[in-house]
Length: 160
Image (tube, rainbow, N blue to C red; front, side):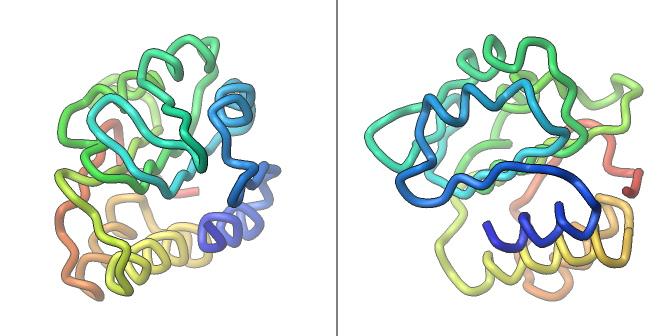
């Protein structure tokens, strides 16, 4: 979470952190229509992520709660969030739609390990500090860590 927060600060964005018990289904959904980026590190599947309690946030919850809001970058750092395009679609992000936005997640499992943490750090650092494109930032994170089971939807050929 701190890597994403550092990136938003570097880019001059306003944002809201939800750490520990403040990451609830209701707080997440209440803020879906605000801001231009989302990062969540949690457990996930192709259609649901977990909050820090016993709540579940689904793709249909997000589709309704975002109220058509447009996000530039969404990274759900959770297992299976790009095994299908359902999460990207819930945020209104589709490959080939002509917009400069991207949804990033994991195909299959991601692990609570130093390599995945390093991947996230490298991605956010390259994207925000060096202002590389989303695609280049992902490729550099892969080169440093060897992690390759990420996937994106939307357009990754833009930079902040």
